[in-house]
Length: 526
Image (tube, rainbow, N blue to C red):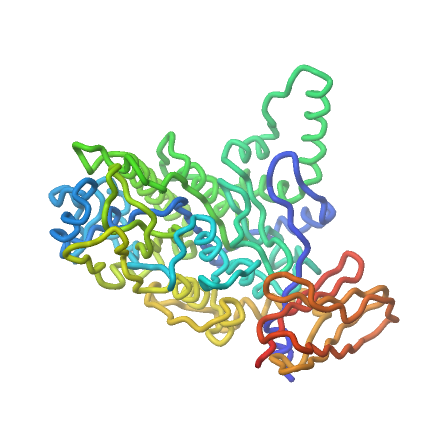
């Protein structure tokens, strides 16, 4: 059996710290990081920036279906954008953009925006919490997953993490979220694969060594001391701080724009050599049940403000990345947990809906519009929704294959199903030797299982000496078996695991020997 086939689904991890002032954990010695800082420039590594529009963006007022305009105006007379105000797109007369989205419009006309129409999933759940979980994990509507799609990819890409990490190929955090708590999208099968900073102010406090005022009391003195100690022991903070200090911003970002401030930080970290492959930034406020528009001018209102901020932030980020010389290796994507209903409500707003457009942005995209304009019923009712054209996991799969060079035959180990791939990127070009293969050689592979997939039994092989805990978890993160929890002599060890009456599905074998952990995904077939 080839080593690659043994390792294909292998992953491992210890919980990485959330990057929040006042909390952290010392995973590695400071000298380990310092020795590798000189190798931290990522001249060829690709970066994906995820822009979350929290609340459920109204896609029909974002990308307006001009060829369906009369029916749209009949369905939402209170909120529809006046046709004369819609921004035209070069080469397309069937769609246009909200009139505040000048920045996105200009990028589109330059071929740097791909509009993917009507993205969603079957059997839409209209709950913010549940639908967000579905988008973050890549689950079906009737399925609950405890790991995120990006976390599973990072496990696939860096299979021995954290054993022998950091190393010369990957000395930096695997993912970074700015502007919110760490997303479920970055949760691996058994461990977090990312770090977060809740807001830009906290980020600047850390990189500047300033923690904000504390009370002039003994409790305040204690708080200041704790902050200092935790900052010193948060070694990921040291790496990010150095990248920030080495980086720069060359573009102009608007003032008072929270999303732009987050993207400005991301651009500077990229320019400073941080090799983190996936970032996430967040913009809230899109749950526009009421006052979405101003009554006497539907082109203005809360939604217009949000779209204007989003457009100018993404435009500033793309321009900055271009000036910094990283345009060929940085890609971005917007997403929201759902769209809004076709018909407006009686409060100058719209209610939770189904599918909505996504924007993929950056120089690497194949510009234009993918898909047809949504079909609007002549007499839309309260429950009518935009019909899904593309499953959101098709977008994920496309970016994993064409951007991060995951072989198509390996996508199912990350997304758990086969999804159609889409023409989003312009001439995707992956390295002859995959990054995944190189990363597998970067660390020590101590855990394997064969056969995989298996029908009833599989053999677990591991190498090491000392007390070994071997556990098996199902896809929901529940412990279903403990094949071993005892001392082993030095050498290679074999364990037979009989899955018994457990249902078919994905399982994770976890090996822990002291501080060392590795995880391998195995698949039981019916």
